[in-house]
Image (tube, rainbow, N blue to C red; front, side):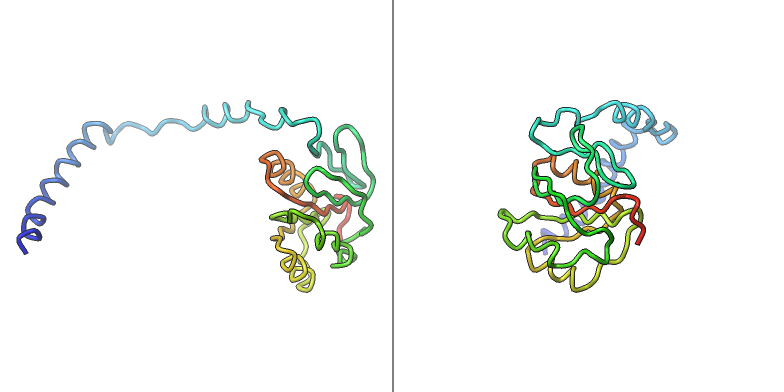
Length: 172
């Protein structure tokens, strides 16, 4: 009980002291610093230019394929880590558990599968979602440009990631 009484007396004194210190260091009429400089400096930094030679990096996404390390690949691609494979689905309805069956044997299991749906984000079949979940991966279904870009970033970070990409010209 004595401790509580002492706290009740000390607490208001402590709050007043903190308010005095805060008001001395940060005048209320001073404007906040501009973020313009922070953004312009950030825009000048390009961390991805220092990618190792053996690492996959998408440089171009076209209506019919993808540009990777100076080579244009026509059609759909399947990427796991730093491996790149041609992939047969031409539209999202052709993406099945069979077309992604490689992920039942790939080790280590990628933490995420980026599904590039083409030009637009499309809903993924619940059975396909369940299959992907059963392999131990998470699924992120986005348009193919964002999937390729996200793949670049996650792969550069050293994360184990996979991508199943339909060309950007695919709409259904």
